[in-house]
Length: 283
Length: 305
Image 1: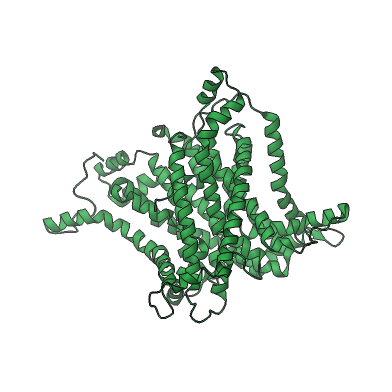
Image 2 (image 1 turned 30 degrees about the horizontal axis):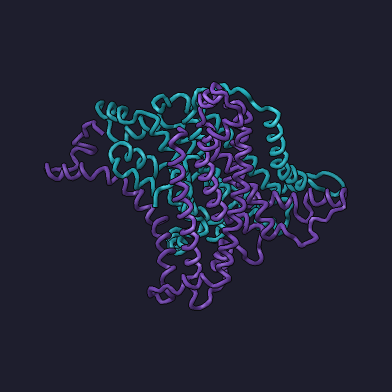
C-alpha cells in the first residue's frame, strides 16, 4: 500500500508553509460569493445557536443553571481535568517520541524516511474503532502494570495524533536548513543532545506548536477509545450525562467546541508568523 | 546527501577498541530510532496484527477462513452496505457543498479574518466533532430541539410523524454531512490556492470568459484533487464512530456499531473473533480508499504546486 500523504489534514500548518505572496484576483463574483457564505453561515451556526438556546432554557425564561452546573458537577469537573491532563501527557509523549526520530530521519537516516512516514500515517487507515479491538489485550497489560487510571489512555492517544503531528514536524524540518545548522553546531563541539535541544527545537518551534495544538484538540474530542476501553474522559462523561441531564451536556458540548475553535484560531495566527519567516527555500 | 558524514559520533570514549567504536558509530543513529519503533510496535503494529490475525483464526487459535466467511451472511453484508451507503452519500454531498464553500472562501482575501475563522471552525467541526455534534443536533432537531419546537408551534409541522429519525440512519446522514462539509473545505482549499492567476490571465487574453476558465482550465486541473478529497471524506465517514454511538444506543445498523456490540456484550461461542473480522473488513475498505486517494493526490500535484 502506498503511504497516503494527507498533509491537508494539518490545515493551518500546511497553509502557513505554502503561503505564496498574495495574488490580486479580478472579476470577484461578490454577490454569488456573499450568498454562498451567508447560506452556509446560517446552516452552520444554527445548530450552535440551538445549543445555546437549549442549554439556557428555564422555567418561564432564560436560565444559566446548566452552565453553572458544569463547574458544580464533581464527575464533570474530574472528567474535564482528566482530559486536560491527558492532553498534556499526550503532547509531551508525542514530542519526546517524534522530534528525535523526525530529526534523525532528516539528518542521518534518510533511507528510513519512507518507512517512518508510512508508520506515522498508518493510524489514518486503521479506524479507532478497529484499533480498540486490537489494543484491548495490550491495555489489559497496561492496567496490570500501571493501574487502571484513565491517564494511561495517553499511550494510545500518542498513536492517534501521530499522523497530524508528524506532518507538522516534518514540514517544519523541511523548511529549515537542518544539515548546515547541525554541522555548524557539531563543529563547535556540541553533542547530539545539545544539537537537538538547543538548535533543532528552537528553529522548528512553530511546527512544534502546531503539532501540539492539533494534538490537544484531538485529545479533548476523543471518545471512541476512552469509551470502549472503559475509561473516563470529558467526551465519555458528556455522553453519559446526556442520558440524565441533556441541558448540561449541551452546555459542555458548546463550551468544548468554542474552546477548540479559539485554540485553532490562535494556531492559525501563530502558524502564519512562523511560516512567513522560514519558507524561503520552499519556493 | 553529499555532505560527508562525521565518522565519530556521539559519546566519544564510550567504546574502547577501534572496531567497537566504529560499529557503535554505525549503529548509534538506529539506537535513537529504536524507542519510537518499539513504541509503535507495541501500541500500533501489534494491535493491528491482532485484528488481522484474529480475523483468520478460530476460537482455538487455529487458522481458518470461516470467520471471515461469516461476514458474507446477510446481516453483516447489510451493515457494510449501510456503512458504505452512508459514507458515499455524505461524501458526495459534502464534497459538492464543501467545494462550493471553499470557493466562496478562496475568492476572498487570503489573510483575512473571515478565512481564518472559517478554517478554524472547519477544523473544529471536522475533527473535534463526535459526541458534541450529536448533542448539537439533539438541541436543534431533537424531540424538544429549537427547530422542532419552532416549526411545531409556528408552522404546525410535526418533524417526527414518521418516527424519531434523528436517532436512526437519516439522523446519521444529517450529522455526518455536517462534519463532512468542513473537512472538504480543509482539504480542497489548498488545491484552489494552487490555481495560478496567470492561467486566468492567459484565458482572458485569448478571449475566454470566466465560464470557459472554469470549464476548460480550472475544472480539469482541480478534478483529481476534488475526487481525492471525496475519497478522503468517504474514509472519514466510514471510520467514524463517536457520533453514531452517541445518537444510536439501541441496535447497530452500521459496522462500527456492530463492532461495539461485540466489544460490550457476551460473545457467542465459535464467533469470538467476529469483531476482529469486522475490523479487518473495515481496514480493507479504508486501505483501498486511501490508496486511491494517494494516487489521485499524486496526479493532482502535477499541476497544483
